[in-house]
Amino acid sequence: MKGSERNSKFLLTHREREVFELLVQDKTTRDIAEQLFISEKTVRNHISNVMQKLNVKGRAQAVVELIKLGELKI
Image 1 (cartoon, rainbow, N blue to C red):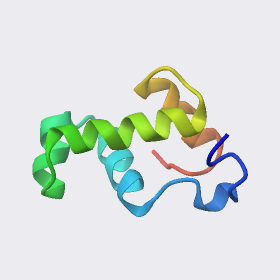
Image 2 (image 1 turned 90 degrees about the horizontal axis):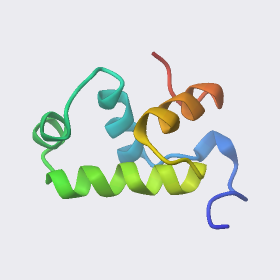
Image 3 (image 1 turned 90 degrees about the vertical axis):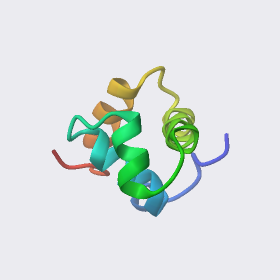
Image 4 (image 1 turned 30 degrees about the vertical axis):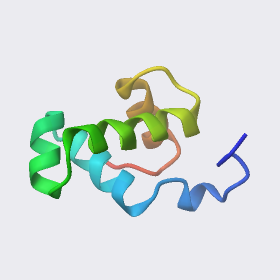
């Protein structure tokens, strides 16, 4: 599985981390897109990529896993 061999310290790309940091601040996909100057589709792609890396089925589950792994602080 791609990404699972990576050091968990660098699980997320810089942009994925930015997206999830905004997501936990209760920002919408549109808010995140506007703040990061990217399209809503790109925001959804970043979220989807992270969910695949973590093998989870939703944004909330991804956030919980990222917090458990120490990748995300709330």
